[in-house]
Length: 377
Image (cartoon, rainbow, N blue to C red):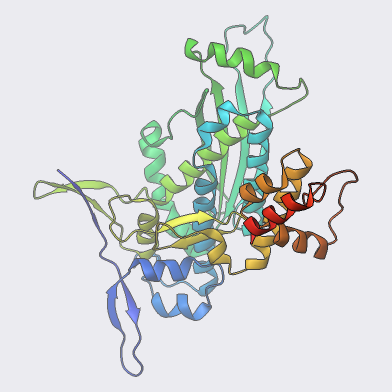
């Protein structure tokens, strides 16, 4: 039996005078809505009345729609930046630290989710409790909601809490993840604390032995622990928003029926791989901004529409590589920029060049310089 996703919620199509035409929400609509620069007219025209949060919640204003879209963009951005995170197990822990810092900056700049690092491992008296597994508090997260958004979320939170461990994310790296989730401020503030306990599987012994040698004694939370916490948090928030879309069997087929609102449909389009007209998300390789597209191969800098910013970033990477001992031609190839273009950008930005470094290959014989210039051109 195949999993069939049903999208039955409609949005308004205004054609001038008279009542609107109601048609199904599609991926093109969702792409336009999730654009951070989407105008209020775009949201207000597609989701009039109670269709955004559903009939049981009621109408909402433009700010409430923007709040919900911002949370969705935040979680999408976290998942996109965490993609392939298991490769960090083979890298120095500083690489995971850097990625965690970038994600925290992205979350802060988006502004809809408040995120702070946890307190680390709790103190344990080994004489009294030597067999206890240490618990690590990794992240504290707060998500403020508008009145209607909180009303929409409440039954989903009840569903997730009722199912308990069934809906928790899987183990991440060497940590068994869990969380505490509650609402405060009359239900308008969601508070999530993310924790992890060390795995006792012997499969990790050899990795642990090498890993602990690289971690300074004064580190409260390692990079890998931060990445595990971020992944669990993103999984938890996305699961929460989709908790009402419970699979069911109808006429012998397994279906995943979306709730009676457009917001759930938006989450489905971003996370359900069986949806033919789904959305694809990514982050710009230059500025880190999230982009959402109906095309799988969309690249981030084409969405940013700022070619000069891309070239500036590539030129800086070129200079860093040359300073690290890479030849100018190899640095240009790795940075996807010509030596001439890198020189123009760096000199225009008044880059602080280091003395004694041949940034442009000028110390080579003249005939070799001419050959390299022709290759670059």
